[in-house]
Length: 72
Image (cartoon, rainbow, N blue to C red):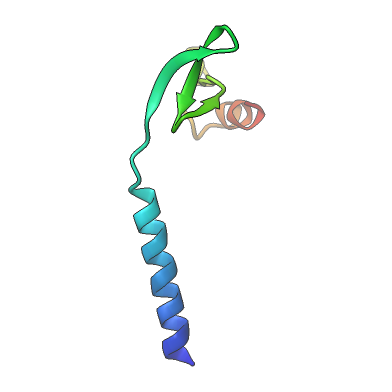
């Protein structure tokens, strides 16, 4: 029973490791008459987030920045 459980866990970890190593592609192509971002040949929204330059919100572990990241 423990051997089977161990083998299942090992196969799960191995499959996650292998899938994490899959190469990704990115390109900007025309889509519906406009430029669009394609990741692995799928249209994606070009969303970017940057922490503020204002004092009190500059570090990602601080409360204000964590709130902003969560809202984003």
